[in-house]
Length: 457
Image (cartoon, rainbow, N blue to C red; front, side, top):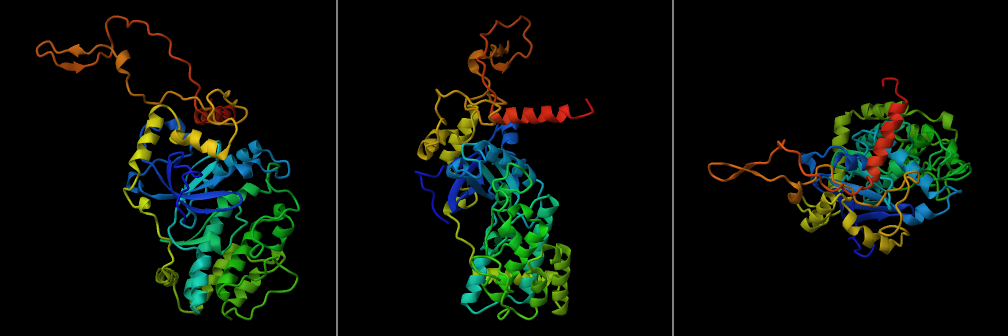
């Protein structure tokens, strides 16, 4: 976890205050963040950010905000345009919203049309599986049957939920498994699906690989678009193989070979299950239900219950003490008042909450055409966010345009404003026409499409 770089990192993305850098890669950057307790955000902006209703009891809940970087958007991926990448990201956001599980971080919000498209999910505070296995290996400790089976059952639950939403992970590995307060959870399936095989707008084409060779099946290394659910089952087995050996994947950095993996340092109790999974023919691998049954039989053979196994795994995580140290700004009630006030002021003026930093951030990233008040607003067909401000949903009453207060005849105190004056109010000059925000336009567009295909008009 690193401190923010004030010259490169924004302070706010959408309604999220950024607190630290969790990691970065070729596609984007991940920030530790917290949703700002903004008021009067407006239903059109709530819809534009795909935000769920804010839970006051969980207001200080932390988030992981993933940003897709400009160099990835602008890079050539088999003639896939930036607009197509954004459209693909928008569809994946809608798909990921359908995945609800304790084994997958909760979806919190996103903006596929922002200059830097972002995706926010629940932050799970705990070490990743790779770090835990390495730590135990350094201390000559391996997973026993209880923690091993508890881990495997949790990963089966997560993959089952992801597959039920017609999604695939395709990059399951120890570093994408976090051991949070509620047990193991799988990360990064949302961004992994940007390279989907099911659409002509995929970022990868036939013959291209995607994922991590140590943990991917052979069919994925040869052709990403041919991967189906058994591919994730293989990655699950490769991850459990890594755990069983104390830190060795079944194959080397170039991925699966024709030879079988070495079983020399794998416990005898784990070999039957792993030998079923780590095979090269997808149809020969077990289903998730079959993997679950084998893990449960492993517990029964060791006279353990699932609850006991989960407790053993949680105790192992606590004893390792590997949970990353959070910055002071992440403590409850530590919202930066300056940032909150600036973001709220932007909302009150009809702008996005991160408007105070748009110009600076775009200048630092050298994004053309953004933040320039003289530049023409992009069209709706281009599926981009228009920049002009709009009228807030519930604006504060303007004193100059308010009717005169009615005075109390006995005391002279102001009592109320007239709701329906007896005489017509003087004509006011026409209000300037302001362009609606992109979020509202998108919501209206979706409604028109829905009604156009409805038979209940």
